[in-house]
Length: 82
Image 1: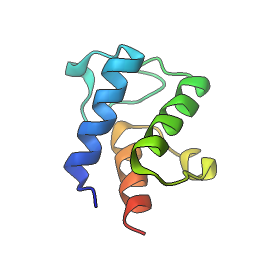
Image 2 (image 1 turned 135 degrees about the vertical axis):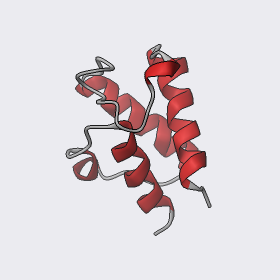
Image 3 (image 1 turned 120 degrees about the vertical axis):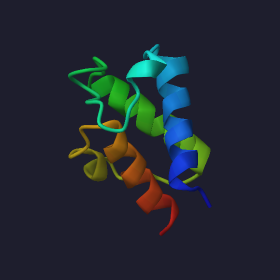
Image 4 (image 1 turned 180 degrees about the vertical axis):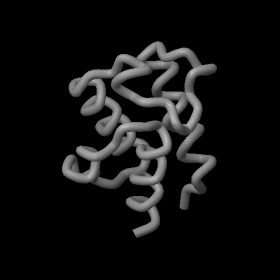
């Protein structure tokens, strides 16, 4: 079972280590595409990395509405607590 804080930490680590995002920018309301310059391929890579960690399949449809770091955290939290 992951807490919201665990998930936030996990997503931040992936963004810093794999996507070279500036950790100081990683506040919950940061926009993934506009402010962090992620693209759709990066979003897929992020989903794949998260699936590996949480051992659950992420429905790509659930990620279509995601715009911010907090959106990612909420979606993953919902998935791991199903």
